[in-house]
Length: 68
Image (tube, rainbow, N blue to C red; front, side):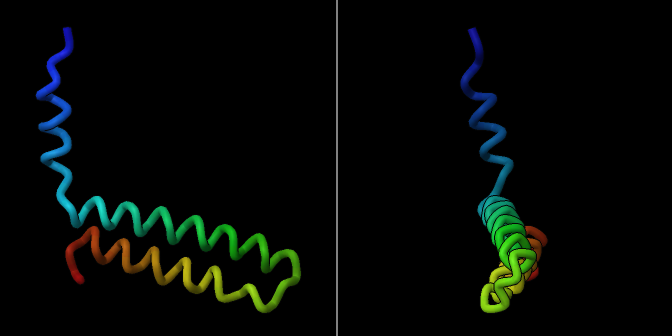
């Protein structure tokens, strides 16, 4: 049988700032990637997506490092 308390210990070590940072980084990278594919498709108005994605990724990194 597996001990279920080990999973709780792992979750206890991941605090809310790290979790928010990881989510922000992933969301920012996904938006930047989507925006880059749209820019490559010659859609100039969609250039805001990679910029927003990079800003979200930056905020995620700052949250991860507990700077914000």
